[in-house]
Length: 322
Image (cartoon, rainbow, N blue to C red):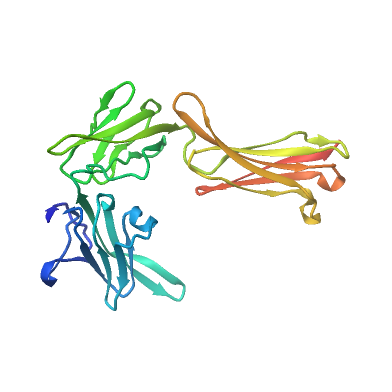
């Protein structure tokens, strides 16, 4: 087994690797193993949590065994494959009457390449992936390899050209893939990666890069009414609309005048992706509250709360009797 060297973290690692004949050693920050080999990792602690490549977690893979012993946590992976390439990490848990949390000062990790000459790229579950380019944070084209020494290049499909990793705007990280540090609209399009390692080159899956027009943050919302003055017996609707990031969901909640009287209303939520020019993609989320047969109790403020993972926006509009 070959190891690659990398600067170790300042805090002592609690992780050890079980070698042949019962020997133990601290694993390097990066390891290279041949696909098919098995590995056993241990981390000190009476309560240890683990993190490992998502494909092992997603399918509850029977090749993976994670157990807690009295003084250490144990992870064993048998019959490894190229798809298992990735970060294996552990943390000690600190528990009290309020629950448990990770102790970041007692942790360990190693990135393992499971080398397979037939699979230079870590296999993907699909043949085509969408990568959103956010204007306010780096974006990653995740074409990771199983051989750390492989020469990897990034290519645009049309116009056909190689995209140079200049170390500033475009960076290559063997653990992550190609990173666009400050994504721009002109970087949109279809790209793929090419890898070569002492043999015929291989091509990765294709990645559709879509530029996100709306920056990260709480929902950018608007509220409008079909009419702000309504005759008795008429129908009306209030529209709450959010323009946001394509991959960020929005939840809506409403407060309205007839709520305490259990006034029947209809609320319908929907969303769609919209291309706003070449390469620009925006998620339009909308919630509509509809009231039939307007009564006096329906007059007042209609309040829409739109929430995503980054915060909440509250808007209101008033409807009165005509």
